[in-house]
Image (cartoon, rainbow, N blue to C red):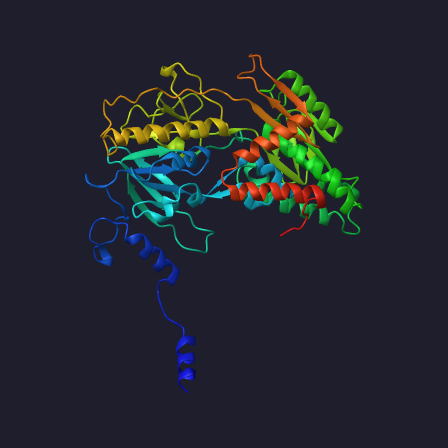
Length: 494
């Protein structure tokens, strides 16, 4: 009965002081070290990717997988460079459509594009890698980046620290949501910048809808649970408010008839909503949102508590769902870098997106801004700015490598050609119910085309459908829109 003996062998527990998964992780990372492995007792130094040799392809290390970093990786020539990406997520988020996923208009996978599809060499070329990790420090003298793996929770693997040597470093780590130091925001509010934020909003919204239908629940508690507050009147806050009002009018009124009169949305803004848009478009947005049931409040949040927030005038507003969308600011990682800063605390760059005080370091996206010495204003934290910077820098790095300056310190005194120039293409925002705003002016003071209504909504959808990165996701988005139009939004709480 050989099968019985084999079964006993397989069922016998394996005793090990170190978890198997941890050994596998350490083994998978250990082959990146360029030196001979020392004995286990001597392995105090983190392993990593060592410096490239003169006859090897130079290495570009990209920190971040947002609009700027992914557009850069897409444009880099893998025949010229080994590309290494370090990011806590393995996908790019198509942020203009993220608000639609919160209420079931789109599925979450429709707005997430895997990095391996954007730059296939990441998963196929021998010297190119993607590391699911956070960057903790940059050693510009030794051309090294210090990293730490991302772990899921406290009961999983301990973070593994390692180093990566670079020939060219591009910091595109993005920014974090601004809380302005207001107490309770991080603990009780939900931001809308990542897919997991949208998932959390969706689960919280549907949970509150179901809890409010429980028999015996006081009316005051029902109204609190079903009060959704959006703080921030920029495009993200307005678009989410519009999507939410659509969801309430079309889906909640049909499928949660017992509580349909209790749910409402409040948008709080300290100044004017959509301040960068044309005045006529702003008035249209205010009229349309008000007609859709969104209550507009001008005020400043002073404190956020578990079940209500306090405004500066002393009034308390109860809520069941609080979404915070008040702009972005520099992340702790950016603040920790000993690099020159532009106004606002971003990494300072020159006209070619270089950090001028160090060699071979560039910065793009929301984490960077022009130094005051350039005479250029700090560009807004927009997807089109980041995408344009990524495209420009990819072409610049390809040119540098072709001219023989790809390796570390190889581009000193090299003519880099034309500097980066940004031309604003316009702004768009949907306000719900097949209505949108399109402002094609290059600045608030300039003259240009501005549209509002159904035609603008059609332009908005068409433009974003063409900007989705892959044909796969374009198909997903188009099918999701069609399914929602015919059958309504998905209200499953998964």
